[in-house]
Structures are given as C-alpha cells and as structure tokens.
Image: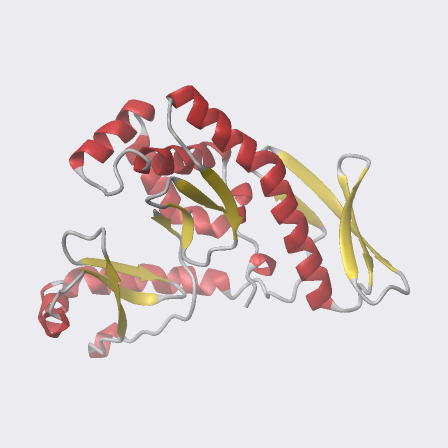
Length: 252
C-alpha cells in the first residue's frame, strides 16, 4: 500500500495543540506518524496498541512534528491556489506522456459527457454550464483512460516479473496510490495517470511485490530492490507527487 495525502488540515504546533487521528493497521509493526496538508497528523498503530501512550510518543517527536508542520503549511498554501470549481483547458496525463486540449460545447442535453476527438482534443458537451456535471464527466473520462492504459501496463509488468495477480481494479482512493489484498487483487488509483511514468511504474512494482510479501518486511524491500534498484529515490519523489494532481479530480 502506498498512501497519498487527502482531507482537512488542522494545525498550531507552536501552542502544542495535538490534534490527530489514529488509524489501526494490521500491517504495522510499530507506531508511525504521518502528516499531510489535508489529513493533518495521523498516528498509525498496530492492532491492540494502547492509544493512551500516544501523547507521550508525540512529545518525544516534538522536533520532527514542528518541522513537518512547517513543511505541510507550505504545501497547504499551494493547495488553495487552485479552486476545485475550476475547469481545465488542457489535461496532461504524464504517466503516458499525452496531453489533450479541452473544449466545452453546450447542448440541450441535461447531462455532460467527455469524448475524445482527433487524438489530442477532448470534447465536453451537454449541460456545460453546470461545473459539477463537467467535473464528473472529466473524472469518468480519466477512469476510462486508466482502464485503457494503466491496467494493461500493470498486467505486462506482472507477466514480465512472474507475479500472480488475480484481479485489477481502478478506483478513486482518497488516501492511497494503490493497494494489494490477500487475494492478490490490486487496486490502482486513476490519479496515477497524472504523475510521471517512472513513479507510476514504481507504484505498480511496489504492489506486485506485495503479492509475494503482504507486509513491509526486509524480504519485501529486498524484492522491491531486485525489481527497481532506484526505489529509495522514487520513494522520495512520491512524497511530492501529489502536487501533480489537479483539484478537479477531488470528488469532495
């Protein structure tokens, strides 16, 4: 599983106001802290962990929390620059190296739909005066592109690496780039179309390795390294990759 930032940011580390939420994970072996512009501070704990210990743990991590909070505040300012009501004139799917010019054409239809025209044009037609309908149409189009390009890509990587994948699902996860289940079902986020192809490929490899080791053990990371020797650099890039995501993709 690889996470992606989402939801509402709450802050004020200077006054030591510790607002956080706890997420229990069956994969977690120890306590992990995550901070993102929209989720704020998330404390990931193993099953059965005594949550009354969390305040003391946070106090020990005060310096890290303050540095992370300062960085997230910068990211949060970037997020508000683009309104989710804004409709794009161009859409670049970096994962597959293609870009479309978007045209909006009003018709008498009570709905809106997005269709490809002449390769590099995307026509949104119908009730284009309704921004929500237009955004929904664009999201559906992105979902179709994910099925068209991402699913076959993942299937090829699985075949080349000898991994067993029983099913591939395209979803709209808010907090994950992708995930793998015990039944070898890999769920991929359609937002992966908007990040560089090298990162999309790495996320696929990461999840394929989970079909062998459904954890983040040393053996798992050794397998990841065999498949992608530069995985540590790509992990670092992923921390900034959410900046590539347009606001209109967010369903909320």
